[in-house]
Image (tube, rainbow, N blue to C red):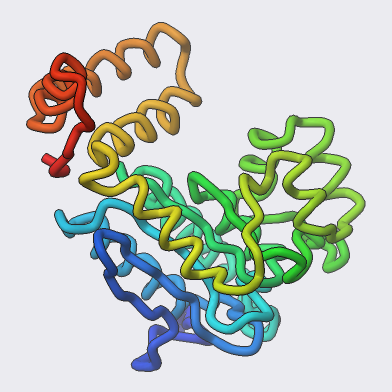
Length: 273
């Protein structure tokens, strides 16, 4: 008799991802209190939100955060995984990998606004973002999967090593400890720490500096793509990619404006075109 692997948590009508656009910034909020743990349903909605922001010409920067003040995300929904069959767990991890790769490959800047605890799969999501900013003294960060008898399976083993180095990554994952945002800043896991008061307002102000007319958003996006893709290829191939991205920018209105503003000794006013 034929059987099929069924999701213990299929895509539901419940809004687990909140999406809004403010002045060129798409805010994507994981919303499943209290820990914003992600399920298959949440990941499908996250995937859709990433595509929506990617395809919207009015969106120049993405900000990913968690609902509330306690958690950015505690990672995968452990109850869901405990109830799932091994085959579903494999495909769940595969889909999560694909979703985070889509985030990395989107040629727009992605900022993780870490508003609270960011552990396990939550940190794996944050590491797929281009820049990570954290709310001062709001929680812990780390990959404690070893305490569950597994490894960080949503890109943690790969992205952590690329961010902090191979030896340090193995040490942190093997210890399974969580640590402060200040230590994360020292390790290079976190780029900036903002005051707790008015955290999201500070994040949005930071994000808007990368939007027109302040920055040529297409140049920021192409720069990101050159780094993300070039990181994985030989130097010569990376340089070829860099030239192709530059040629696309040479044809843009923002390039013409930037060069003209420089020659005329005035601030550039970019349009994102």
